[in-house]
Structure formats: C-alpha cells, structure tokens
Image (cartoon, rainbow, N blue to C red; front, side, top):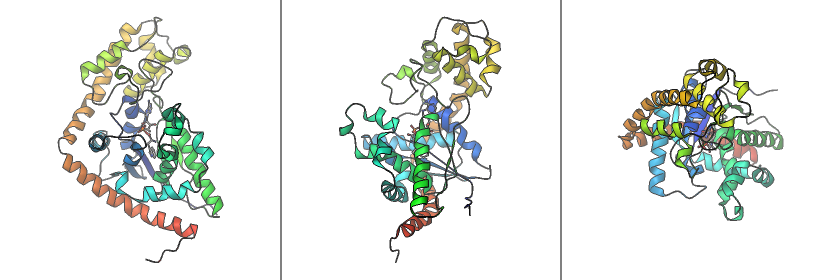
Length: 339
Ligand code: TYM
C-alpha cells in the first residue's frame, strides 16, 4: 500500500556570507508564496552546513541572523512558517549520522558541489564537506518533507536525498520516508555571474562585481548592472534569438524574474535596441524590487535579540515535528528505545 504523506515544504539557506540576487530569485522570494497553500512550511538557516568550510564564529552568528532577517524580509512569517537555525534542532545531526550508514561514499564523490568546493586539494577538505548531502537529506527527511523549493544548483543534492530515502525504505522494508519532489521553477532557477555567463552567480566568487548582494545600495546595483558583461548585438524579439548569447540571456532572465513576466513578453519592448537601453531599465527594476527588501532586512537586524527569540521558538516547533520521526527511524533500524 502506498503511504500518503501530508504536504510539507522545507528549504534551507546557508549563512556563509552575503546573500545574492541568485539566492533571492532562485529560492527566497518563492518561500512566502507557499504559506497558506495548504502545506506546512519549514524554513531553516543551515548553520551546520556553513561550517563544512571554516567560518569565523562572530561572523557566523551575524550571518545566521542576517539570513533569518532575509527570510522575514521576503515575507516568511514566523507565526505561520517554522523558522529556525539548524543547530538548535539536534535531530538534523542525528538523522545525518543514520543516513551516513545508508548513503554510499561513491554517491558523495560524484557531487559537483563537492568537486567545486573541494577543488584540487580534496584530500584536505573537511569530512563534513564530503558528507554534506547526507545532512541535507536529513534536513528534509526529518520532517517527512514532500517538496523542496530550491535553485537549479541543488538538483543533484535533491536526487541524492531521494536515493537515500528509497534505499532506506528498501533496506528496512517499509515506506517510511517520502520521495521528495524538487520544486525548481521560473526563469531564474540559475542566475549567472554578471562577469561570466557560464558561471553561477555565487557569494563565493572572488569578484564582488560578479554578483548583486541583497545588501547592495541602489548606486552599487546600478553600477554593477551597467558594467555587466554583454555583447554588442541588438536584442532580438524572441528568447530563441539569444541561444548563443549567455550573458544577454542571463540579464533577460533576471529582468523576467524581477518583473514577473516571461522573456518573450519582455523582448518585443527592447527588440532592435542595444544594452545601452536595456541595462538602465533593468537597473531601475532591480532597485525597485530589492530596495524594500534591503530596508526590511536592516530593520530586522536592528533587533538581534528578537531574531534570536524567533529562531528559538521556531526550533521548539521544529523539534516537535522532527523528534518522533527520528525516534521512529532508530526504532526501525533496531535500536532500543527504553527511556
Ligand atoms: P545555498 O545557501 O547555496 O543557496 C540557497 C538557495 O539559493 C539558491 N541559489 C540560486 N538560485 C538561482 N541562481 C543562483 N545563482 C543561485 N545561487 C543559490 C540555491 O539553489 C538554494 O535554493 N545546500 C543548500 C542549503 C540546504 C538546503 C537544505 C536546501 C541545506 N539543506 C535542505 C534545501 C533543503 C545550499 O547550499 O544553498
């Protein structure tokens, strides 16, 4: 018999530095919309993931609050959604250990994020960086989450989460974990660097000009868009005409995501014009969308004690859901539960 799971959305963001327009368009701005959709919504600042590469403790605390502020600035309401930081709910680390015995080492070595982050000297990367996807599966499956909204770069990790759930269910002969659906949607599932259309926009890129940070002011945003790498050709009337122009495609996708239109709705307005016309329009749009969010973020950051209180309350609610699921997992695996 097929087990049915109640609809539950889970997503997480690492507090490993400033948030980018990529984080916002690919993930953050979609989160509030799931509230009131009939699904329970659980959003997490994943500090245990961030420490897989060294973090300055004081900065980690600051960044954790900043990501929490960004969730709320983007409309996540802690009275509706469960909002917390990962390390306050010990079930994440516990279930990750159990999954370390289910997942195979080869699965971890195949992850492109591990290869990218570990670089040439992978023997010297932390063991946590290699095991990272097992913790991510635990984040999701500790809540029996049925769907996970993320950007395209997390697709491989979500496939691995499904593999872990399926292998556990098979090994222990019951449909205990759901096979979670990735929700990777819209025109901004992969926002690219402003300096190189073949690279993802990322907080870890050494060039600050490659990204728009959620904390950038209006002038900085406008300047970065003005300097974004493009080509000399005029814009075509349809998106198909941008097939071989990755930088141009990226800017049009960003425009579409910000304005809530499709690229094919936007392009006829700019057909035959160059980037001299398109970039100022994009800059104005980006500032008008991001400025209110930046302002709300800094308002929340004005009261760090309140953020900590919200995260603590969220962690209590998260524990209520995760604890029985992780307890049951241990029982299924044959561990004595006698207290
Ligand atoms: P992280 O912190 O790198 O990014 C947070 C979210 O932002 C999305 N994203 C992007 N989307 C489009 N274009 C981009 N350039 C771009 N850059 C980032 C990411 O896809 C992500 O949705 N492993 C995760 C965090 C995590 C998680 C989880 C997510 C841990 N446990 C459980 C979902 C469920 C990560 O490093 O995201």
